[in-house]
Length: 123
Image 1 (cartoon, rainbow, N blue to C red):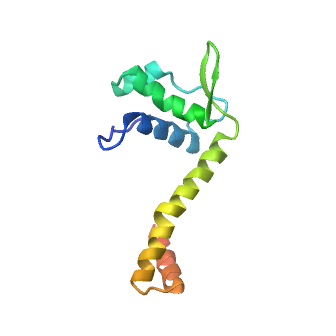
Image 2 (cartoon, helix red, strand yellow):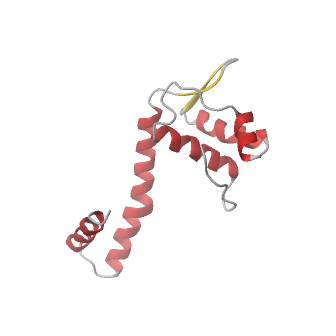
């Protein structure tokens, strides 16, 4: 678990996103225990309340759940839920924006599809 804190966004949101990324990438499998808020606080040198806010955000979304006296765990179905959420965000942030810009520039859908395929071949 390593990433730099981005001062332009709330730290608790970044903590939640780091946990989400670890779930999506398989570093935190479903039903596995996540680090405690104190561990997050120590690692990132932040207030434990800030770390807790990020964990609680995921708990409210049903991504994490608490086992009383033991800690927080990744919920069953969390990965699929997160992947679906991220796909929707990807569509809105990138695809819709790309389509709007293509329309402004007079790029047809076929031309755009060709550009995407060409870009995919470069990786």
